[in-house]
Length: 375
Image (cartoon, rainbow, N blue to C red; front, top):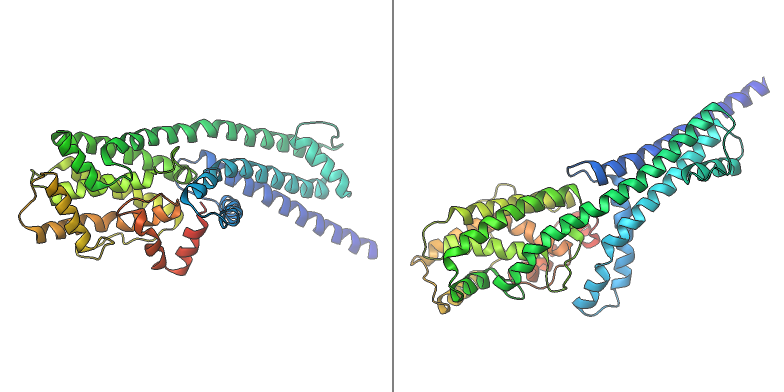
């Protein structure tokens, strides 16, 4: 009877070890597929946990820094290191999972189970199981190891290709929008360079840019955190400047209504909201035109004076113009400020310059997500 009881207990233990090992392997496969293959926003818990752990290490390194340039140099390494650490965590988890599987199916020795798992994952072949189930485990583990490495190799060109396409218009905007980039400056420089009549072309280009960014920055959740080549530039402050210029163009400037500017704002707030959803940044999906925004009335008045100094004709009804600007900005203001805080964007008026105040008003859970900046 004692032998039967011991045998039953061993069988239950082996079954539990096998289930635990299989679960770890499934978690890794799910994380890899969602991170590198699935063409939509689907951040998996293991991926998020690794990203947050790496971010905490960076937070410790950032504490002694006193300048934005120093923080930017450090944070520029965040995504590259994360992209390397994540597959390493996957491979280690696969090894642990298969150690449990080999222990449950092939051997009663933990040392032999580890040898089988390590040899199989790295396809070293210095030791191999002696049973058919063990051989099947070895073959599947080798295939998973090769697949993870292949996914990483295929993933890197995709992420850096999308990054390069994003940064082309951001770099071009520096000539149009100043440094730091500003929506008001975009309009002022267009007037000074006698290109005011060509602003619709700018807004058409940025409609396409917003569509591409929405697709790439939600399916590849690393991309929003990948920093621009120059410390003073950021994709999110550039996006905010273009949206502000389009809102001012249609609401304040005395020109015929521009459908392209309107479409640009709609494409912009749709993209920023979709990216905000990935990171859990809250916003009102159906705001009223008169809801409060982060732009004060005196800031709006100063923007109007800057446009007038550039000899840009403005609409006579300033009160209605302010309401219209508010109505545009309320659609993208919260996602813009939340993302500016998330990516630690450089200073830019009407966006990153008020993102810290915005974070202070968020719910505690949302504040923690923004501080950590994890995917």
